[in-house]
Length: 417
Image (cartoon, rainbow, N blue to C red; front, side, top):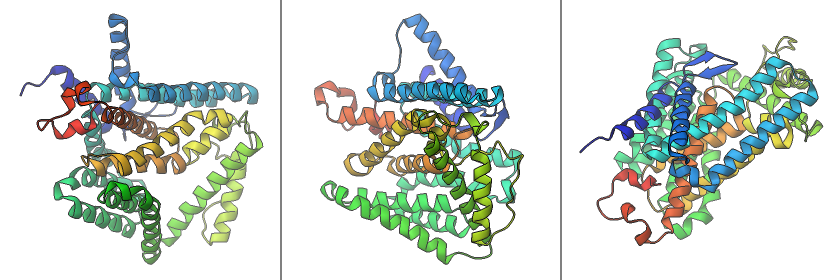
Protein backbone atom coordinates (compact mmCIF):
# COMPACT_ATOMS: atom_id res chain seq x y z
CA UNK A 1 0.00 0.00 0.00
CA UNK A 2 1.38 3.40 -0.99
CA UNK A 3 1.67 5.96 1.79
CA UNK A 4 0.77 9.43 0.59
CA UNK A 5 3.15 12.14 1.88
CA UNK A 6 0.27 14.51 2.62
CA UNK A 7 -1.62 11.92 4.70
CA UNK A 8 1.58 11.03 6.54
CA UNK A 9 2.27 14.70 7.32
CA UNK A 10 -1.27 15.25 8.61
CA UNK A 11 -1.19 12.18 10.87
CA UNK A 12 2.27 13.11 12.14
CA UNK A 13 1.15 16.63 13.00
CA UNK A 14 -1.88 15.32 14.91
CA UNK A 15 0.23 12.80 16.82
CA UNK A 16 2.94 15.37 17.55
CA UNK A 17 0.36 17.82 18.89
CA UNK A 18 -0.95 15.17 21.25
CA UNK A 19 2.58 14.24 22.28
CA UNK A 20 3.45 17.83 23.21
CA UNK A 21 0.19 18.78 24.92
CA UNK A 22 1.43 18.23 28.47
CA UNK A 23 4.75 20.06 27.92
CA UNK A 24 4.38 23.83 28.32
CA UNK A 25 6.39 27.03 28.17
CA UNK A 26 5.57 30.43 29.65
CA UNK A 27 4.54 32.67 26.74
CA UNK A 28 1.87 35.18 27.80
CA UNK A 29 0.74 32.55 30.27
CA UNK A 30 1.00 28.79 30.14
CA UNK A 31 1.33 27.68 26.50
CA UNK A 32 1.58 23.97 25.61
CA UNK A 33 4.08 23.10 22.89
CA UNK A 34 1.19 21.52 20.98
CA UNK A 35 0.01 25.03 20.12
CA UNK A 36 3.24 25.67 18.24
CA UNK A 37 2.32 22.68 16.08
CA UNK A 38 -1.15 24.15 15.57
CA UNK A 39 0.38 27.51 14.65
CA UNK A 40 2.46 25.75 11.97
CA UNK A 41 -0.62 23.91 10.70
CA UNK A 42 -2.56 27.19 10.59
CA UNK A 43 0.32 28.69 8.60
CA UNK A 44 0.14 25.86 6.06
CA UNK A 45 -3.61 26.37 5.82
CA UNK A 46 -3.13 30.10 5.24
CA UNK A 47 -0.64 29.41 2.42
CA UNK A 48 -3.11 27.00 0.81
CA UNK A 49 -5.89 29.57 1.04
CA UNK A 50 -3.70 32.18 -0.64
CA UNK A 51 -2.57 29.80 -3.40
CA UNK A 52 -5.87 28.00 -4.05
CA UNK A 53 -8.10 31.00 -3.29
CA UNK A 54 -10.49 28.83 -1.29
CA UNK A 55 -10.75 27.34 2.18
CA UNK A 56 -9.70 23.68 1.89
CA UNK A 57 -10.95 20.98 4.21
CA UNK A 58 -14.28 19.18 4.46
CA UNK A 59 -15.02 20.23 8.03
CA UNK A 60 -14.87 23.93 7.19
CA UNK A 61 -17.96 23.44 5.03
CA UNK A 62 -20.09 22.44 7.99
CA UNK A 63 -22.41 25.08 9.49
CA UNK A 64 -21.52 23.73 12.94
CA UNK A 65 -17.89 24.80 12.47
CA UNK A 66 -18.96 28.35 11.70
CA UNK A 67 -21.33 28.34 14.65
CA UNK A 68 -18.44 27.39 16.95
CA UNK A 69 -16.25 30.02 15.31
CA UNK A 70 -18.95 32.66 15.67
CA UNK A 71 -19.17 31.79 19.36
CA UNK A 72 -15.45 32.46 19.68
CA UNK A 73 -15.72 35.80 17.90
CA UNK A 74 -18.62 36.89 20.11
CA UNK A 75 -16.77 35.76 23.24
CA UNK A 76 -13.60 37.63 22.28
CA UNK A 77 -15.61 40.79 21.58
CA UNK A 78 -17.30 40.43 24.98
CA UNK A 79 -13.90 40.10 26.67
CA UNK A 80 -12.68 43.27 24.94
CA UNK A 81 -15.73 45.25 26.06
CA UNK A 82 -15.53 43.88 29.60
CA UNK A 83 -11.81 44.60 29.99
CA UNK A 84 -12.10 48.13 28.61
CA UNK A 85 -15.06 48.84 30.87
CA UNK A 86 -13.34 47.38 33.95
CA UNK A 87 -9.99 48.96 33.05
CA UNK A 88 -8.30 45.59 33.39
CA UNK A 89 -4.52 45.66 33.71
CA UNK A 90 -2.67 45.31 30.41
CA UNK A 91 -1.02 42.03 31.39
CA UNK A 92 -4.29 40.37 32.43
CA UNK A 93 -6.02 41.80 29.38
CA UNK A 94 -3.40 40.29 27.08
CA UNK A 95 -3.60 36.92 28.87
CA UNK A 96 -7.39 36.91 28.70
CA UNK A 97 -7.65 37.78 25.02
CA UNK A 98 -4.83 35.45 24.00
CA UNK A 99 -6.67 32.44 25.47
CA UNK A 100 -9.58 32.95 23.08
CA UNK A 101 -7.30 33.75 20.12
CA UNK A 102 -5.19 30.64 20.68
CA UNK A 103 -8.32 28.55 21.14
CA UNK A 104 -9.61 29.77 17.78
CA UNK A 105 -6.29 28.89 16.12
CA UNK A 106 -6.34 25.46 17.79
CA UNK A 107 -9.89 24.69 16.63
CA UNK A 108 -9.10 25.80 13.07
CA UNK A 109 -5.91 23.70 12.97
CA UNK A 110 -7.64 20.59 14.36
CA UNK A 111 -10.58 20.99 11.98
CA UNK A 112 -8.10 21.15 9.10
CA UNK A 113 -6.14 18.08 10.25
CA UNK A 114 -9.22 15.97 10.99
CA UNK A 115 -10.89 17.09 7.78
CA UNK A 116 -7.87 16.16 5.69
CA UNK A 117 -7.51 12.72 7.28
CA UNK A 118 -10.15 11.38 9.66
CA UNK A 119 -7.67 8.95 11.26
CA UNK A 120 -5.91 12.01 12.69
CA UNK A 121 -8.28 11.90 15.64
CA UNK A 122 -6.97 8.47 16.66
CA UNK A 123 -3.39 9.60 16.10
CA UNK A 124 -3.99 12.60 18.36
CA UNK A 125 -5.09 10.22 21.11
CA UNK A 126 -2.03 8.04 20.57
CA UNK A 127 0.10 11.17 20.91
CA UNK A 128 -1.72 12.18 24.10
CA UNK A 129 -1.12 8.72 25.53
CA UNK A 130 2.64 8.78 24.97
CA UNK A 131 2.81 12.51 25.75
CA UNK A 132 1.41 11.93 29.22
CA UNK A 133 4.18 9.44 29.91
CA UNK A 134 6.77 11.83 28.47
CA UNK A 135 5.58 14.68 30.71
CA UNK A 136 5.96 12.51 33.82
CA UNK A 137 9.44 11.42 32.78
CA UNK A 138 10.52 15.01 32.18
CA UNK A 139 8.91 16.78 35.11
CA UNK A 140 7.76 14.17 37.60
CA UNK A 141 4.28 14.19 39.11
CA UNK A 142 2.53 16.82 41.19
CA UNK A 143 2.56 15.98 44.90
CA UNK A 144 4.48 12.80 43.97
CA UNK A 145 1.18 11.19 42.98
CA UNK A 146 2.32 9.17 39.99
CA UNK A 147 -1.13 7.78 39.26
CA UNK A 148 -3.51 10.75 39.42
CA UNK A 149 -1.00 13.28 38.09
CA UNK A 150 1.12 10.84 36.13
CA UNK A 151 0.41 7.54 34.48
CA UNK A 152 -3.31 7.23 35.22
CA UNK A 153 -4.34 9.45 32.30
CA UNK A 154 -2.16 7.79 29.62
CA UNK A 155 -3.18 4.31 30.76
CA UNK A 156 -6.84 5.32 30.57
CA UNK A 157 -6.47 6.52 26.99
CA UNK A 158 -4.67 3.27 26.10
CA UNK A 159 -7.48 1.18 27.61
CA UNK A 160 -10.17 3.04 25.69
CA UNK A 161 -8.21 2.74 22.46
CA UNK A 162 -7.54 -1.00 22.86
CA UNK A 163 -10.64 -2.27 24.71
CA UNK A 164 -12.61 -2.95 21.47
CA UNK A 165 -10.06 -5.68 20.68
CA UNK A 166 -11.45 -7.68 23.64
CA UNK A 167 -15.00 -7.68 22.35
CA UNK A 168 -18.05 -5.92 23.76
CA UNK A 169 -18.44 -7.73 27.10
CA UNK A 170 -14.79 -7.98 28.08
CA UNK A 171 -14.12 -4.47 26.81
CA UNK A 172 -16.82 -3.01 29.10
CA UNK A 173 -15.56 -5.17 31.97
CA UNK A 174 -12.05 -3.76 31.48
CA UNK A 175 -13.38 -0.20 31.57
CA UNK A 176 -15.25 -0.91 34.83
CA UNK A 177 -12.15 -2.52 36.35
CA UNK A 178 -10.14 0.58 35.40
CA UNK A 179 -12.76 2.77 37.07
CA UNK A 180 -12.43 0.76 40.27
CA UNK A 181 -8.66 1.13 40.13
CA UNK A 182 -8.96 4.90 39.68
CA UNK A 183 -11.25 5.26 42.68
CA UNK A 184 -9.00 3.07 44.82
CA UNK A 185 -6.07 5.33 43.90
CA UNK A 186 -8.06 8.54 44.59
CA UNK A 187 -8.52 9.61 40.97
CA UNK A 188 -12.21 10.29 41.47
CA UNK A 189 -13.01 12.20 38.28
CA UNK A 190 -11.39 9.61 36.02
CA UNK A 191 -13.04 6.76 37.90
CA UNK A 192 -16.40 8.41 37.40
CA UNK A 193 -15.73 8.91 33.69
CA UNK A 194 -14.91 5.21 33.35
CA UNK A 195 -18.14 4.15 35.06
CA UNK A 196 -20.31 6.53 33.05
CA UNK A 197 -18.60 5.50 29.80
CA UNK A 198 -19.21 1.84 30.65
CA UNK A 199 -22.89 2.65 31.31
CA UNK A 200 -23.22 4.32 27.89
CA UNK A 201 -21.46 1.40 26.21
CA UNK A 202 -24.03 -0.90 27.82
CA UNK A 203 -26.81 1.27 26.38
CA UNK A 204 -25.20 0.99 22.94
CA UNK A 205 -25.29 -2.81 23.20
CA UNK A 206 -29.10 -2.99 23.28
CA UNK A 207 -31.53 -2.53 20.36
CA UNK A 208 -31.67 1.06 19.16
CA UNK A 209 -35.35 1.62 19.92
CA UNK A 210 -34.66 0.97 23.63
CA UNK A 211 -31.57 3.14 23.95
CA UNK A 212 -33.13 6.56 24.46
CA UNK A 213 -35.52 5.52 27.28
CA UNK A 214 -32.63 3.83 29.12
CA UNK A 215 -30.10 6.63 28.63
CA UNK A 216 -30.93 8.68 31.72
CA UNK A 217 -31.19 5.61 34.01
CA UNK A 218 -27.81 4.42 32.72
CA UNK A 219 -26.21 7.79 33.43
CA UNK A 220 -27.74 7.75 36.92
CA UNK A 221 -26.42 4.24 37.60
CA UNK A 222 -22.91 5.15 36.46
CA UNK A 223 -22.90 8.30 38.60
CA UNK A 224 -24.36 6.65 41.71
CA UNK A 225 -21.95 3.73 41.39
CA UNK A 226 -19.08 6.22 41.37
CA UNK A 227 -20.26 7.86 44.60
CA UNK A 228 -20.93 4.48 46.25
CA UNK A 229 -17.52 3.02 45.43
CA UNK A 230 -15.76 6.24 46.36
CA UNK A 231 -17.58 6.36 49.69
CA UNK A 232 -16.53 2.78 50.51
CA UNK A 233 -12.92 3.51 49.56
CA UNK A 234 -12.50 6.50 51.85
CA UNK A 235 -9.50 6.15 54.08
CA UNK A 236 -6.39 8.02 55.03
CA UNK A 237 -6.60 10.23 51.94
CA UNK A 238 -10.12 11.46 52.72
CA UNK A 239 -8.77 14.87 53.78
CA UNK A 240 -7.20 15.45 50.38
CA UNK A 241 -10.45 14.64 48.62
CA UNK A 242 -12.36 16.95 50.96
CA UNK A 243 -9.88 19.76 50.32
CA UNK A 244 -10.33 19.37 46.57
CA UNK A 245 -14.12 19.43 46.93
CA UNK A 246 -13.98 22.53 49.14
CA UNK A 247 -11.75 24.38 46.69
CA UNK A 248 -13.81 23.51 43.60
CA UNK A 249 -17.05 24.42 45.36
CA UNK A 250 -15.64 27.78 46.44
CA UNK A 251 -14.39 28.45 42.90
CA UNK A 252 -17.72 27.72 41.28
CA UNK A 253 -19.68 29.66 43.89
CA UNK A 254 -17.44 32.72 43.54
CA UNK A 255 -17.57 32.60 39.74
CA UNK A 256 -21.35 32.24 39.74
CA UNK A 257 -21.75 35.14 42.16
CA UNK A 258 -19.45 37.22 39.96
CA UNK A 259 -21.62 36.47 36.95
CA UNK A 260 -24.84 37.30 38.83
CA UNK A 261 -23.36 40.64 39.92
CA UNK A 262 -22.58 41.60 36.31
CA UNK A 263 -24.30 39.27 33.84
CA UNK A 264 -23.73 41.36 30.71
CA UNK A 265 -20.43 43.20 31.22
CA UNK A 266 -18.60 40.58 33.27
CA UNK A 267 -15.75 41.04 35.74
CA UNK A 268 -12.91 41.28 33.20
CA UNK A 269 -10.03 38.96 32.35
CA UNK A 270 -8.60 37.13 35.38
CA UNK A 271 -10.87 39.26 37.61
CA UNK A 272 -8.00 41.70 38.20
CA UNK A 273 -10.35 44.63 38.89
CA UNK A 274 -12.98 42.78 40.89
CA UNK A 275 -13.33 41.27 44.35
CA UNK A 276 -14.11 37.80 42.97
CA UNK A 277 -10.80 36.23 44.01
CA UNK A 278 -11.12 37.72 47.50
CA UNK A 279 -14.61 36.25 47.73
CA UNK A 280 -13.26 32.88 46.56
CA UNK A 281 -10.63 32.85 49.30
CA UNK A 282 -13.23 33.71 51.94
CA UNK A 283 -15.58 30.98 50.70
CA UNK A 284 -12.74 28.46 50.59
CA UNK A 285 -11.57 29.28 54.10
CA UNK A 286 -15.11 29.02 55.49
CA UNK A 287 -15.78 25.79 53.59
CA UNK A 288 -12.55 24.26 54.88
CA UNK A 289 -13.54 24.99 58.46
CA UNK A 290 -16.99 23.44 57.96
CA UNK A 291 -15.47 20.36 56.32
CA UNK A 292 -12.87 19.98 59.05
CA UNK A 293 -9.86 20.34 56.75
CA UNK A 294 -7.02 22.78 57.23
CA UNK A 295 -4.35 24.58 55.28
CA UNK A 296 -6.44 27.29 53.60
CA UNK A 297 -6.16 30.90 54.63
CA UNK A 298 -7.06 34.26 53.13
CA UNK A 299 -4.00 35.29 51.11
CA UNK A 300 -4.17 38.69 49.49
CA UNK A 301 -1.37 37.73 47.09
CA UNK A 302 -3.31 34.88 45.50
CA UNK A 303 -4.75 36.64 42.46
CA UNK A 304 -3.93 34.46 39.43
CA UNK A 305 -5.50 31.18 40.42
CA UNK A 306 -7.40 29.60 37.51
CA UNK A 307 -11.04 28.97 38.34
CA UNK A 308 -11.84 25.31 37.59
CA UNK A 309 -14.86 25.75 35.33
CA UNK A 310 -14.51 26.73 31.69
CA UNK A 311 -18.14 27.74 31.33
CA UNK A 312 -18.30 29.73 34.57
CA UNK A 313 -15.00 31.47 33.82
CA UNK A 314 -16.33 32.55 30.42
CA UNK A 315 -19.55 34.06 31.77
CA UNK A 316 -17.92 35.50 34.90
CA UNK A 317 -15.08 37.22 33.03
CA UNK A 318 -16.97 38.33 29.91
CA UNK A 319 -20.63 38.16 30.88
CA UNK A 320 -23.20 36.00 29.12
CA UNK A 321 -21.66 36.84 25.74
CA UNK A 322 -18.21 35.94 27.07
CA UNK A 323 -19.51 32.41 27.51
CA UNK A 324 -20.95 32.24 23.98
CA UNK A 325 -18.42 29.71 22.73
CA UNK A 326 -18.77 27.41 25.73
CA UNK A 327 -22.56 27.52 25.51
CA UNK A 328 -22.40 26.40 21.85
CA UNK A 329 -19.67 23.90 22.69
CA UNK A 330 -21.74 22.41 25.52
CA UNK A 331 -24.78 22.01 23.29
CA UNK A 332 -22.60 20.37 20.61
CA UNK A 333 -21.17 17.90 23.17
CA UNK A 334 -24.69 16.98 24.30
CA UNK A 335 -25.71 16.27 20.69
CA UNK A 336 -22.54 14.22 20.06
CA UNK A 337 -23.11 12.09 23.16
CA UNK A 338 -26.70 11.41 22.09
CA UNK A 339 -25.57 10.55 18.58
CA UNK A 340 -22.79 8.19 19.71
CA UNK A 341 -24.95 6.47 22.31
CA UNK A 342 -28.41 6.35 20.75
CA UNK A 343 -28.34 6.96 17.01
CA UNK A 344 -24.93 5.96 15.66
CA UNK A 345 -25.03 2.65 13.78
CA UNK A 346 -21.36 1.78 13.86
CA UNK A 347 -19.69 0.63 17.07
CA UNK A 348 -16.22 1.43 15.72
CA UNK A 349 -14.09 3.23 18.33
CA UNK A 350 -17.14 3.86 20.53
CA UNK A 351 -15.15 3.64 23.83
CA UNK A 352 -12.63 6.34 22.94
CA UNK A 353 -15.28 8.53 21.29
CA UNK A 354 -17.52 8.45 24.36
CA UNK A 355 -14.60 8.94 26.72
CA UNK A 356 -13.32 12.04 24.90
CA UNK A 357 -16.82 13.55 24.84
CA UNK A 358 -17.48 12.79 28.51
CA UNK A 359 -14.07 14.12 29.48
CA UNK A 360 -14.85 17.32 27.56
CA UNK A 361 -18.13 17.56 29.49
CA UNK A 362 -16.31 17.23 32.81
CA UNK A 363 -13.74 19.84 31.77
CA UNK A 364 -16.46 22.23 30.62
CA UNK A 365 -17.83 22.41 34.16
CA UNK A 366 -14.88 21.49 36.38
CA UNK A 367 -11.57 22.35 34.66
CA UNK A 368 -9.78 25.64 33.92
CA UNK A 369 -9.78 27.39 30.54
CA UNK A 370 -6.02 27.57 30.04
CA UNK A 371 -2.94 25.68 28.94
CA UNK A 372 -3.37 22.10 27.83
CA UNK A 373 -7.14 22.31 28.27
CA UNK A 374 -7.33 24.47 25.13
CA UNK A 375 -5.87 21.56 23.18
CA UNK A 376 -8.45 19.23 24.71
CA UNK A 377 -11.27 21.60 23.74
CA UNK A 378 -10.04 21.83 20.16
CA UNK A 379 -9.72 18.04 19.81
CA UNK A 380 -13.24 17.61 21.19
CA UNK A 381 -14.48 20.19 18.67
CA UNK A 382 -12.74 18.30 15.85
CA UNK A 383 -14.33 15.04 16.97
CA UNK A 384 -17.78 16.63 17.15
CA UNK A 385 -17.33 17.99 13.63
CA UNK A 386 -16.34 14.52 12.39
CA UNK A 387 -19.42 13.02 14.00
CA UNK A 388 -21.63 15.77 12.59
CA UNK A 389 -20.25 15.09 9.13
CA UNK A 390 -20.79 11.37 9.63
CA UNK A 391 -24.40 11.89 10.71
CA UNK A 392 -25.08 14.00 7.64
CA UNK A 393 -23.52 11.38 5.37
CA UNK A 394 -25.50 8.61 7.06
CA UNK A 395 -28.77 10.05 5.76
CA UNK A 396 -27.46 10.56 2.23
CA UNK A 397 -28.14 8.08 -0.55
CA UNK A 398 -25.72 5.32 -1.57
CA UNK A 399 -25.26 6.99 -4.94
CA UNK A 400 -24.02 10.16 -3.27
CA UNK A 401 -21.45 8.33 -1.11
CA UNK A 402 -19.97 5.47 -3.12
CA UNK A 403 -16.61 5.69 -1.38
CA UNK A 404 -18.07 5.05 2.09
CA UNK A 405 -20.01 1.84 1.43
CA UNK A 406 -19.23 -1.75 0.62
CA UNK A 407 -17.42 -4.57 2.37
CA UNK A 408 -14.00 -3.22 1.53
CA UNK A 409 -14.13 -0.11 3.66
CA UNK A 410 -11.61 0.22 6.48
CA UNK A 411 -12.46 0.25 10.15
CA UNK A 412 -11.64 3.92 10.40
CA UNK A 413 -14.04 4.79 7.55
CA UNK A 414 -16.79 4.76 10.15
CA UNK A 415 -15.49 8.17 11.14
CA UNK A 416 -15.90 9.34 7.55
CA UNK A 417 -16.10 12.90 6.41
